[in-house]
Length: 298
Image 1: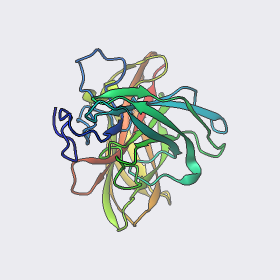
Image 2: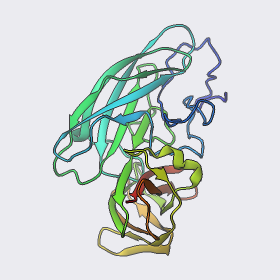
Image 3: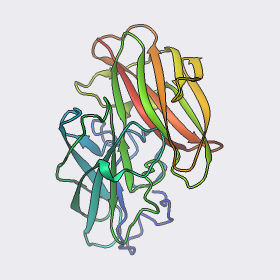
């Protein structure tokens, strides 16, 4: 097992400080040994959908203006023999393609879990909070786990690079025509930064991360026009099958964008076509964030 981001060795049993993380993979339906197992290393392996954390499990259907109940799986790779108390918070957000500091008014709930060492995992008690009626048709869920001896480096929800954070950011749209998703491109930094935002099909290596009600089967589907639009309605990028644009975002900016995707051809009942919006810091290979989009057949 490799060393973690902070150099701590998961096989080193003398470090008894908590090493907490929201358990983000593998998807729960896969047999043991067929997929990497989350040991807290970040960034996650390339075959993992970082924006679809399997450890964040909605227990009720999302409906604006109604309560939403969610449970979260927490892992711990500390040494020693002692269990650790983990603090767990949950927020909602509009669909967002990059990291952000969660808004206090979008806090859904808090609980604690007691997690064994050496890779122990515990599912939290259900957390229930009200999603406002004006939230929009889709939301992102953000979970944070911490302990006084194991704190995240900042308040920024950065699930790609920080094991203390995870997100569940999936939008389901019907096929049979173009689907449009409003979302935010975010810059959590204290200075201006340049980002690349792209939209297109999900590589088959990441299909296993998509879990939809009724267990439909993922299939490859080309796309016709893919369009990224700015807040003023200006077309930022257009392409066949995929599109990308470069944005310069001010410090702390969350810029409203829209993506429109039209899957090519029809999708059979019991299938879905996975697409994604991915945001990168310009010049970096590791994504800053992303959104999953599933077009369902039938």
